[in-house]
Image (cartoon, rainbow, N blue to C red):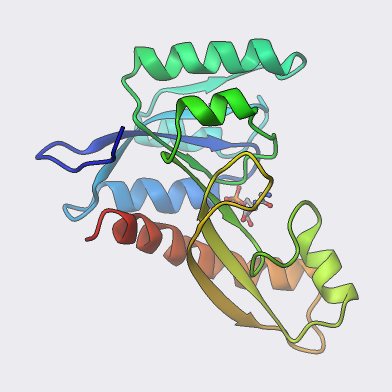
Length: 193
Ligand code: GAR
């Protein structure tokens, strides 16, 4: 199914695991007239995600799914997505890998943000590895999700300069500021807006 923008905004779910700062920036963006998406559901695999507070604050339905058994969690998530007529998914710091079947059922409709200049530094502990490798630049990437980790088609990237005294923590902070701008931009781009 192709993505299309009619007069109504596309019902979107944001998947999180932690702080949810990208979720917050996406909620703010979704409220703008120019946004093609509305955020109607927040999914978390972690009941302690700080990001879940944004569900309460912005009155968006939020649900925790227990990932002890991934296949069961995914089945429950798919039911919830259908129930809420969700047609688009933004992964925002979601630290679980979606199954091939899940991705197939939302083909071309799942985006992810990753805190590196993909295809470099896929996977976890990105900032630690970037600093250990003495890189002079890092950044962030918004991409479509396919069945290979952090490998789907790249939509947009933003470069960030690394200073000599940067630590994984300071780098993460600098990159997050750019992530909050890049995700909305990438959404506008895929809808040709
Ligand atoms: C972000 O930096 C995001 O790019 C990263 O987790 C952080 C979540 O922050 N995602 C990944 O590493 C995915 N592999 P947030 O919860 O404040 O949005």
